[in-house]
Length: 336
Ligand code: SF4
Image 1 (tube, rainbow, N blue to C red):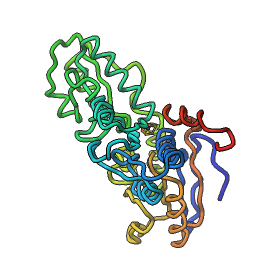
Image 2 (image 1 turned 90 degrees about the vertical axis):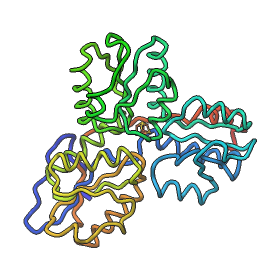
Image 3 (image 1 turned 180 degrees about the vertical axis):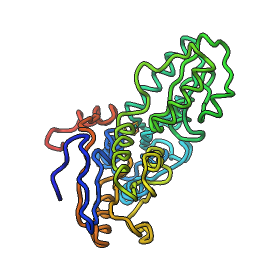
Image 4 (image 1 turned 45 degrees about the horizontal axis):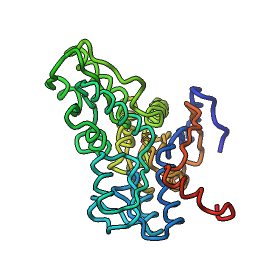
């Protein structure tokens, strides 16, 4: 593998017959996903199987299947968890009512909500307490949107794109704020915000970006790949919002084709027809082992030249959920 190119450098031009792969950096697991998966693994280690997990801990098939093999049981609703059991809440966050239901069932709850989702929850609560109308830009039915709306259901309305933005109504145009899901397309969100601003000139923006660093820097990286790659492959699951947005970002930035795959064996050889440069990246919930298997598959099809295209450094990490940190402190040091 060639050494990484410096941030924002242009990938080298291929020689005529070279088939090459441009590998995005950053890509793959973000700090919130890493923390959520580690939380389930640590809970299994501390309490033994089974550990229940409400919703897919992160939106990735491979991760869910791997944790199932280790003893995690995934459920949709809290009332599917036997009373008195251990339950981990997913990285996407939940409404406060879920904590109440869990307490009623005497569950030991480990909340793996990503701290960057919690930040949006806190913003929602604060603006609701100040009696603002909150316009939450996000995708209807996404777990994160359900959890954020649940923080202040009487004050939040979902705005799912510019069409919704053109028709949403508020009580007082002087007290309106927009917030967003953390995993949206930056460009599309700004379009929606522009529409909202033409309707509500006093619209307040969130104090800091709600679309998280991982979503943003992966979109920037995939756009860079798309400038030179005819085909872009994003490794990620269909229900992963940030992975889907990366496919859209690649197409928007000039890739001829872009596909989302969970596993290497989903790649269709026909996609490679006439392609000299493949861009490869992965969503924030996809582990690098899946990218490695795609690299291997591509090498088997002649794409042996791999060049890393680096657009940002990424060093953010989050500590384990507080419930586990507390339990770890009660363990003898030798056991840690
Ligand atoms: Fe947190 Fe962003 Fe990762 Fe979601 S994508 S878990 S908000 S860091």
